[in-house]
Amino acid sequence: MKEKRETRLTEGKYFGEVALITKLKRTATAKAEDYTTLAYIDRENFQEIEIEFPQVYLNFKRMIREYRDHDFQFRRNMIKNVPYFKNLDDEFIEEIVYLLKPHRYDSSTTIIKYGDITDKIHFLKQGEIEVTIPSPQLANDPGSETLFETLNPGSCFCAFSAFSEDIQ
Image (cartoon, rainbow, N blue to C red; front, side, top):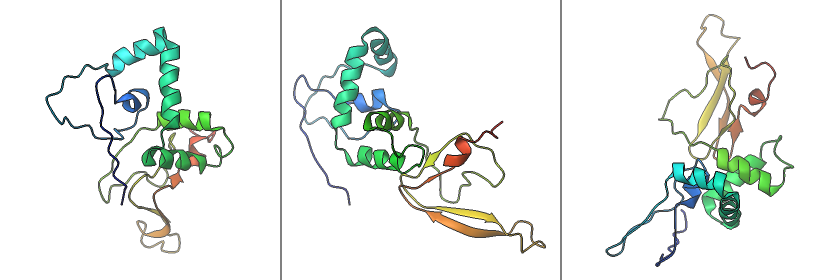
């Protein structure tokens, strides 16, 4: 069970910077305790800030790097588990974390099929995935498969395919 941590935001404080800089879902919930007035910057305006005032953008990224949020730490560790990324410095790992795009799949949905070509590395944050391979010993049943591996949170798959020269 996740630890619940509350922070009370007061006048002049901000939230939402993680979503503006990364492609990740919100890492916190914000709830008005009283009559509240907010101003906001949307992603399009924030991208203009990145171009016009790169130091402001870099300062936000530096502050985010210091966050010890459980989800962020989990994502960092997932990236470090990929052999290609294992020896990269933390700043580069952080840049990869910002590029992650979450995608949800319903139970029993096929994510990728045997023979498919992919240009993505998949990182499993939540749930369980069964990896199956065709069963050549059951030639009379062409659709038969054998369970090869069960992936759990923190696993990645298609890492070698994404860097393959065979992608067309």
